[in-house]
Image 1 (tube, protein in one colour):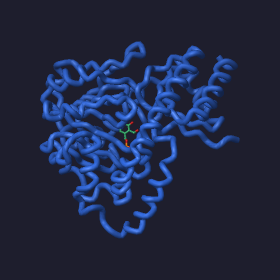
Image 2 (spheres, helix red, strand yellow):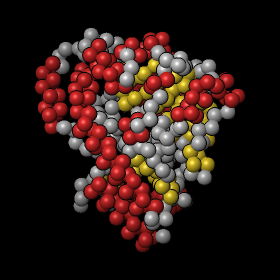
Image 3 (cartoon, rainbow, N blue to C red):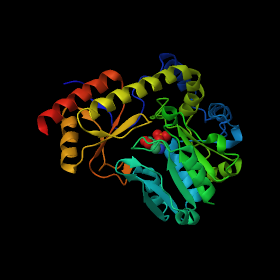
Image 4 (spheres, rainbow, N blue to C red):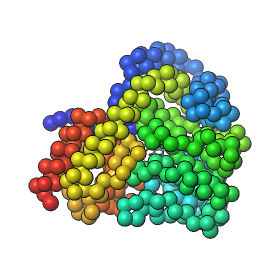
Length: 335
Ligand SMILES: Cc1ncc(COP(=O)(O)O)c(C=O)c1O
């Protein structure tokens, strides 16, 4: 049988540059030392340069999951608004801290529209926006984010962990909106999911507040060095992001041509609607038997997703063409 194809976690499915791996392996000799004094000065400067802001507005963390947790603990005490369907960790963090949360349904007739009402926004201390949203892949228009920012005195946290695929960021608004916090990741775009590296971007005042909930040595030395070094290879990764976008559109079109509705995505995954839970389970099990792993709605990855969806992370063209062929054959012969 073919080797397993993992379209489940939305990590980068391409190899890291050989030279980067070599540079990192040389760093192993120094893991007897702590990371850079806990202040992460060089890493923070590099992240600030990449994000187009100043180092005092940056806070590196152990993956963007840790950014989500610390934002929740810093600002979620009164009421957290979570748009659904979305990534499950906003809910999980609220639960862990026993904070009040309110889910806001945003998917209607397969259109994801962020629709926070004025009253909820007035009461909230923390409002989540996932842009582009996981698992729908929907981009959130900048005008919508600005309107939400102006309508609440709570913190608006924009999760931009898939920014590299959409190209749309609101980092440039942090001076204008003191209630804006952004979360970024190195997992989906730079292939560092296993090392765990993410960061928050906001006014220095918010950064200091979020840092109160984080450990001194929260980013390990290898992740610190990887973050510093990986940005030198930006051209290599930009080329991969383009390839993934191209493959995503090819796969989405191929699947749509079989009659399956695929939501338009600006991310490194697509969400497909198989209409009934029974049909969805059949497709998901069939793919698993063929050694192809995807994420179904009933798994822990999402909050508020109906059980007739499967999310496919986009890999390289060859693997996606193979999976498309499997699906075409199965759908033709089964339904
Ligand atoms: C929307 C979203 N935010 C955050 C994360 C967590 O990413 P990280 O690996 O940086 O913790 C994920 C991972 O799947 C995600 O999809």
